[in-house]
Image (cartoon, rainbow, N blue to C red; front, side):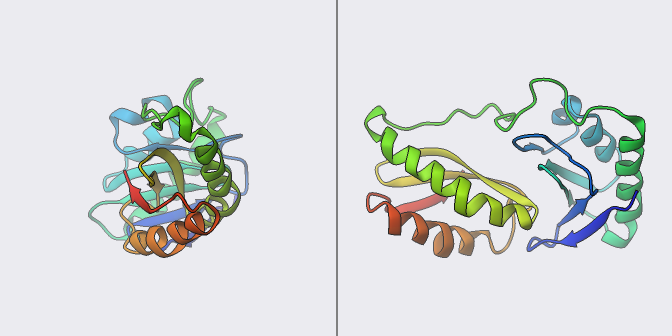
Length: 186
């Protein structure tokens, strides 16, 4: 098994591409050992000293480090990913999904059409681009012209995430949806 690695815009996060499917749909993020109970792979990765976050996408795994250097962490992470695939275990337990963190979307019923357009633009124009950088951005809410987004994987804590939100996503949404005034992270 050959696993490619790619740097992300977030220097604390590295993207691992196993060349095999990771999740059949959606994405899920684990921010600590306790959250990783629903994923044998994430639990295995959190056993490595220095791993602070795991994000599973459709065909990649993003790992965020705390203290430590990539040259020391990378071999252990590659080994854990290979071990997991060789074990034949599932990536996640049944029921682990994109909204695994339990946060509910919020918006007023009269904004349903606006929210539908926001989600469509995020799904078709934003999410594929940020997935290439090892992250994900999902809709969380809309209120009084403000769109609230949840940044996950490499996007969470990334130094360029503010620029991505302000200059990329906000401009895109404002172009297509005049009611949108601002985009904020949750």
